[in-house]
Image (cartoon, rainbow, N blue to C red; front, side, top):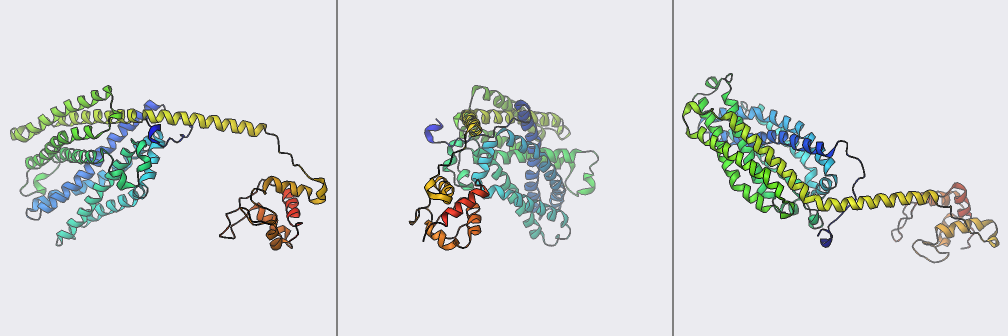
Length: 445
């Protein structure tokens, strides 16, 4: 199927993996899940901060709430960056050809991640440390967070586009940059699913943050209570989780069938079943008695953690199944590449040096003539332009400078626009260059 649609099939780097493949897969899944939790809280926290600040224009307590959440964003983004190193290294190692091909195809946008992340982080620090200073200019302060939110929403989209592009080697020839890759199936549904995950995790983070016994809610807020703050978090987690149930089927349908297997449905259905329990407990927290609001908090966190593990495992199973046929082709091409390389090395080692056939009638320039015939006649004639200039032109330039001719042959540059660059002949010894120059300069103009 891949060959019938002219899919690029490169050979891989024939190196042993630094760890067993199963261990790298486990590290990839576990490290990515740890990383994505803090990415979720960073993205969701920035959105929640922006919402709180806007709402705080009419109710000061929501501005205070936004400030409290904003204090955590810079911490969470630092942890997210550090925890992102491990999954990046694992996916590079396991899917080298696919990861780097996707990066190359999105080109400029992939390179822009570093400056965009830097700007986003600096904006969060600026927003955090100018809270009091810009108290009289709230819209400027809100605009700083708005720009930061826009960047935090865009950067994950770049990552998601690249990871998604890895799954489609059959599309690589038709991709013309980031916008082209953005149109591939599953990108936007997965992106909205990610946003809902970010808001759900942030909602639980808000509950945990405000339920701590040593957190002085009564001293910080004038009208918002600990119960009211926890309800904000539970409502956010509930709404985002319900939205995930709506978007999830769209994500599943938009994935190409090539990655599906019967085994894949086991972790997905298990994840859905556990998520239903989490949503049920979230609903009880929001609608139940005030004193029972935290009764199932631990169960909710555990259930959603298990759900994420199941979904993360399912995602890896889908990727492995989708790429397996192409990986077989790559493995075959790599094996053939290694065979040809070994054959070339063996032939080179056993090859006999090419014997120069000299014409004794040419006297002292016989060896130079033989070297010229062996190395130069495909591009140069005596009096006519071929690929390069005729020998007579060389004579007119170097007739009084044989040393200059030797240097040019050994390391040529480009002199004329109407002639191609001459290749270097570093394989010729100094004696060969002397004989070759002597022969060329023996030609009469």
